[in-house]
Each structure stands twice: as C-alpha cells, then as structure tokens.
Image (tube, rainbow, N blue to C red; front, side, top):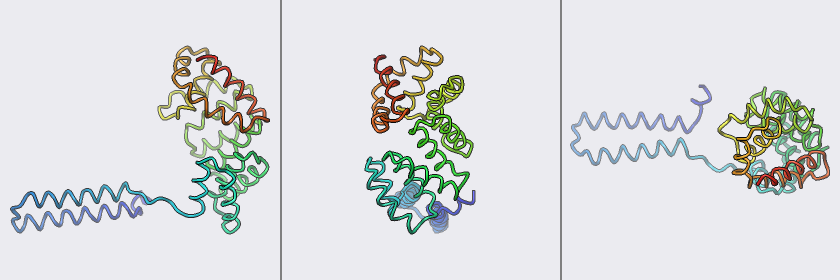
Length: 254
C-alpha cells in the first residue's frame, strides 16, 4: 500500500480528484447554469487523470539500451553496454542479471554463471537472477541443477509460467513423474505464452498420452520456431540435442 501511495502518477491523479471536487463545489455554490461547460471541464480533468495513471515514459539509460538490444537479439551489443555499465555499477542486480542472460544467449556459459552468481550473492532471494541461472544450467545440459534453480526461483516469487522450463528440465533429466506433475499444473494457467503452451502440451502428450494435447499442439505448431531457435543456438549441448528431438516429434504431428 505504501509503495502505491508513493507513486507520483497516482499522487497527481488524487490531486486532480481534489481539484475536480473543489471546482464542482464552487460551481454549484455559485449557481452555475452552464452544464455543457461544466461537463466539458470535468471531462478534460478525467482524461488527464486517466493519462497520468497509464502513461509511462520510455525508459532511458544504459540498462534500457541493453534491454532493447537483448530483445532485438543483438546480444553482443547488450554485453558491450552492460560490461561498461557494471564496471561502474557493480551492485546493480538488474544489470548483472541481464548481462548474465546475454552471456548465456551468446553461449558464453562460464561468464553467464559467474555474473548471475554475483547477482545472487547480492540478492540471494531474487527470483530473476535465480531463474537466469536455471536457464543457463538448462542450456548447458545440467538438467537436475537447472530444475533445482528454477524451483528456487518459483519459491522466491518467480512467474508461474517458468514452470514450463521446470517441466522441460525434469523431462530432459528423465525425471518423468516430476515432469508430468509440473506440466499438468502448468497447463491450467491461462496466461501461458503460445510457445510455452506448445511445450507443455507436448509433455502432456508424451508423458500422459493426453489426446486433448494433440489438438492444442496442432493449433500452436507454428510456435515451434521459438524452440528451433533455442535448439540452433545451443546445438552442441545436450539441451540443444534434446530440443531438436522434441521439435522433430512435434513436426510429425502436423
């Protein structure tokens, strides 16, 4: 509640509410007889209120630039920006996490783990670097350790959708009962991204022979592209090899 009250946009919106009611009170007290003018003023104030709540300024700075490069798939640029930034800002957990993730996507696993572990030393219960570490371990093919890290990230408040990667880690580690358990729980979520939905339903089909999953796989089949990019990036690791097998099986179900 305190953090909400400290939000400057909400403070501004609340101030406008007060102005609005003062204006209405004064207008009524003076016997205002122009409802169109009064309504117009109230409409303008309401628009400003809504805008103040939902308008967000585009982030700027080194971390924002690196984030944009990361989203565009330009991991080398993200790494260059963040290496320079973290030299001067060595305790910025968000920047370190992004750098560790960029190293992973650039297939520099040693650096990825080193930076993500540094972030975790600074913030041991932060779900974001913990999940990043889990993803790096998964990409390396250390499936059991990856599952352990992602489990911890979930315990620390990580988004429930990352159970997709947890189920996949269990599956690739040949812990099939755990994979089925997590996949079944994850399938109940309505907010899964299409590529995650595809993977979860693949797991449900191969682990539980869920016939409903086949229909979903066929409707989401185009999103296999995400996993193909992953497989190509990590082609020389057990993770990339395992993904390629999964992809081929999904494509056979078209």
